[in-house]
Length: 110
Image (cartoon, rainbow, N blue to C red; front, top):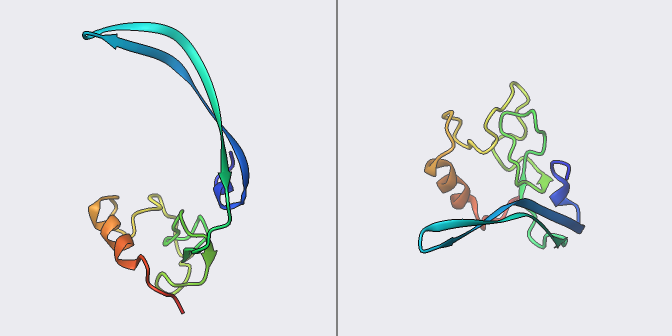
């Protein structure tokens, strides 16, 4: 699946494969390589998430669904972002970034 494809409503096949191990009383037994698939239906988001959609922007947020500049002064294209979810730009993705996201949750954007 292409990056960002989850933003487009539709039906997508998810395929998982690998060796399956069963543990009985701490002893592992392999039942071989298994492949399973499931279908995921993505519907239109009734609560769009505003932010910066440009992947090369410093303040790019990968869960944004539409561009409106609500995260600061819009998209900052002055540099490359290596950690797209590092919201406070401290070079590490941690609890502080999660708290920033949760602090914005539910706020109505102008």
